[in-house]
Length: 130
Image (spheres, rainbow, N blue to C red):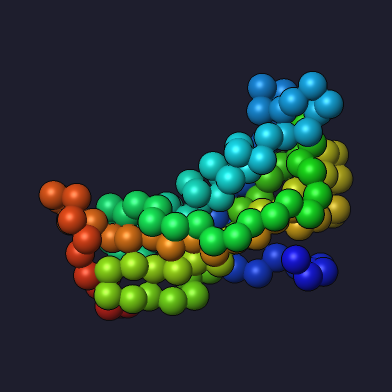
Protein backbone atom coordinates (compact mmCIF):
# COMPACT_ATOMS: atom_id res chain seq x y z
CA UNK A 1 0.00 0.00 0.00
CA UNK A 2 1.50 3.32 -1.04
CA UNK A 3 1.86 6.36 1.19
CA UNK A 4 -1.13 8.68 0.88
CA UNK A 5 -1.81 11.86 2.75
CA UNK A 6 -5.47 12.29 1.73
CA UNK A 7 -8.28 9.85 1.02
CA UNK A 8 -9.54 9.31 -2.52
CA UNK A 9 -13.16 8.66 -3.36
CA UNK A 10 -16.36 9.76 -1.68
CA UNK A 11 -16.84 9.59 2.09
CA UNK A 12 -19.50 6.89 2.33
CA UNK A 13 -19.49 5.82 5.99
CA UNK A 14 -18.18 7.06 9.34
CA UNK A 15 -18.43 4.93 12.47
CA UNK A 16 -16.88 4.76 15.90
CA UNK A 17 -14.64 1.84 16.87
CA UNK A 18 -15.99 0.54 20.19
CA UNK A 19 -14.57 -1.82 22.84
CA UNK A 20 -16.87 -4.64 21.71
CA UNK A 21 -15.13 -4.60 18.32
CA UNK A 22 -11.63 -5.01 19.79
CA UNK A 23 -9.29 -7.70 21.04
CA UNK A 24 -7.72 -7.65 24.53
CA UNK A 25 -4.94 -5.31 23.34
CA UNK A 26 -7.42 -2.68 22.16
CA UNK A 27 -6.91 -3.33 18.44
CA UNK A 28 -10.09 -3.46 16.37
CA UNK A 29 -10.69 -6.78 14.62
CA UNK A 30 -9.84 -6.76 10.91
CA UNK A 31 -13.10 -8.52 10.15
CA UNK A 32 -15.03 -5.62 11.66
CA UNK A 33 -13.12 -3.15 9.48
CA UNK A 34 -13.77 -5.31 6.41
CA UNK A 35 -17.48 -5.48 7.27
CA UNK A 36 -17.64 -1.67 7.37
CA UNK A 37 -15.92 -1.56 3.98
CA UNK A 38 -18.47 -4.06 2.62
CA UNK A 39 -21.35 -1.98 4.00
CA UNK A 40 -19.93 1.12 2.33
CA UNK A 41 -19.59 -0.61 -1.02
CA UNK A 42 -23.16 -1.87 -0.68
CA UNK A 43 -24.42 1.67 -0.08
CA UNK A 44 -22.48 3.19 -2.96
CA UNK A 45 -23.20 0.37 -5.43
CA UNK A 46 -26.94 0.29 -4.59
CA UNK A 47 -27.12 4.04 -5.26
CA UNK A 48 -25.38 3.56 -8.62
CA UNK A 49 -27.47 0.49 -9.56
CA UNK A 50 -30.64 2.08 -8.21
CA UNK A 51 -31.48 -1.23 -6.57
CA UNK A 52 -30.32 -4.34 -4.81
CA UNK A 53 -26.66 -5.39 -4.97
CA UNK A 54 -24.49 -8.14 -3.51
CA UNK A 55 -20.78 -8.52 -2.94
CA UNK A 56 -19.29 -10.87 -5.54
CA UNK A 57 -15.58 -10.51 -4.75
CA UNK A 58 -13.03 -8.75 -2.60
CA UNK A 59 -9.58 -8.46 -4.10
CA UNK A 60 -6.36 -8.47 -2.07
CA UNK A 61 -6.42 -6.58 1.21
CA UNK A 62 -3.63 -5.93 3.71
CA UNK A 63 -3.68 -3.87 6.89
CA UNK A 64 -0.98 -1.20 7.16
CA UNK A 65 -2.01 0.19 10.56
CA UNK A 66 -4.31 -0.85 13.40
CA UNK A 67 -7.60 0.80 14.29
CA UNK A 68 -7.87 1.47 18.02
CA UNK A 69 -10.83 1.84 20.37
CA UNK A 70 -12.21 5.37 20.06
CA UNK A 71 -10.98 5.98 16.52
CA UNK A 72 -13.53 7.07 13.94
CA UNK A 73 -13.33 4.75 10.96
CA UNK A 74 -13.93 6.65 7.71
CA UNK A 75 -14.65 4.65 4.57
CA UNK A 76 -14.20 6.19 1.13
CA UNK A 77 -15.51 4.55 -2.04
CA UNK A 78 -15.02 5.18 -5.74
CA UNK A 79 -16.83 3.36 -8.55
CA UNK A 80 -13.93 2.73 -10.93
CA UNK A 81 -15.63 0.45 -13.48
CA UNK A 82 -19.18 -0.44 -14.46
CA UNK A 83 -19.77 -3.61 -16.46
CA UNK A 84 -23.05 -5.03 -17.68
CA UNK A 85 -24.25 -6.34 -14.28
CA UNK A 86 -21.27 -5.59 -12.03
CA UNK A 87 -19.44 -2.63 -10.58
CA UNK A 88 -15.85 -2.45 -9.39
CA UNK A 89 -15.21 -0.16 -6.44
CA UNK A 90 -11.95 1.03 -4.91
CA UNK A 91 -12.48 1.37 -1.17
CA UNK A 92 -10.18 2.94 1.42
CA UNK A 93 -10.44 2.74 5.21
CA UNK A 94 -8.96 5.64 7.16
CA UNK A 95 -8.75 6.05 10.94
CA UNK A 96 -9.42 9.47 12.37
CA UNK A 97 -7.46 9.06 15.56
CA UNK A 98 -9.28 9.42 18.88
CA UNK A 99 -9.66 13.06 19.98
CA UNK A 100 -7.63 14.23 16.99
CA UNK A 101 -9.87 15.61 14.26
CA UNK A 102 -6.88 16.50 12.08
CA UNK A 103 -4.94 13.19 12.29
CA UNK A 104 -6.11 10.70 9.65
CA UNK A 105 -4.18 7.55 8.78
CA UNK A 106 -4.88 5.06 6.00
CA UNK A 107 -5.52 1.64 7.49
CA UNK A 108 -6.23 -0.48 4.39
CA UNK A 109 -7.72 -0.49 0.93
CA UNK A 110 -9.23 -3.06 -1.40
CA UNK A 111 -11.14 -3.59 -4.61
CA UNK A 112 -14.72 -4.83 -4.22
CA UNK A 113 -16.86 -6.23 -7.03
CA UNK A 114 -20.59 -5.76 -6.56
CA UNK A 115 -23.38 -7.27 -8.72
CA UNK A 116 -26.79 -5.69 -9.34
CA UNK A 117 -29.74 -8.04 -8.77
CA UNK A 118 -33.36 -8.02 -9.85
CA UNK A 119 -36.35 -8.83 -7.60
CA UNK A 120 -35.71 -12.57 -8.13
CA UNK A 121 -32.07 -12.39 -7.06
CA UNK A 122 -30.73 -12.77 -10.62
CA UNK A 123 -28.05 -10.46 -12.04
CA UNK A 124 -29.52 -7.48 -13.87
CA UNK A 125 -27.94 -4.78 -16.02
CA UNK A 126 -26.62 -1.71 -14.21
CA UNK A 127 -28.58 1.27 -15.56
CA UNK A 128 -26.79 4.08 -17.39
CA UNK A 129 -25.78 7.06 -15.30
CA UNK A 130 -28.30 9.89 -15.21
